[in-house]
Image 1 (cartoon, rainbow, N blue to C red):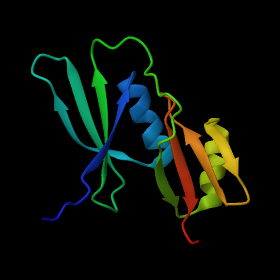
Image 2 (image 1 turned 180 degrees about the vertical axis):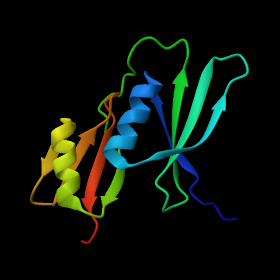
Image 3 (image 1 turned 60 degrees about the vertical axis):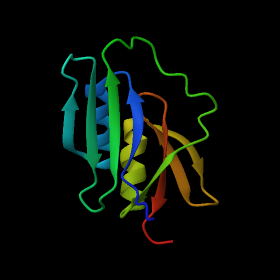
Amino acid sequence: MKFTFSHNNLNVLDLEKSLAFYKKALGLAETRRKEAADGSFTLVFLGDGATPHKLELTWLKDRKKKYNLGDNEIHLAFTAEDYVAAHELHKAMGCICYENAAMGIYFIEDPDGYWLEILPGKR
C-alpha cells in the first residue's frame, strides 16, 4: 500500500482576504474551487505551479468568529528562491511574526493567525 501527499487544509474566516494574502505573500494561485450546493461552504485549492501539493482553504458560510488555533504549534513551510527579496516583501507587508537569524529562517502569519515558515532555497 502506498500513500502520497495530496493537500493541507486551513479554515479561513475571510476567503477573499486569505486568497489575496496567499497570492501576494507566496505567489500561490487558485487551481480548483468547490462550492457547496447549498452555499454553506467553499473550498479553494491553491498551488505553487511547481509541485503537485495543494493548500486547501475552507470557508464556512456561518462562521463569524476567528478560529481558536490553540498554541499554533503546527505550520507549513515554503522555500524561497530569493530569500532576501522574500524577507523584504514580507517585512513590507508587516506579516513577519518570528525570526530566527541563527537558523536562517523566519515565519509569517496569515490573516487567520496561521504561521508559515520561510526557508532559503539553498541550505
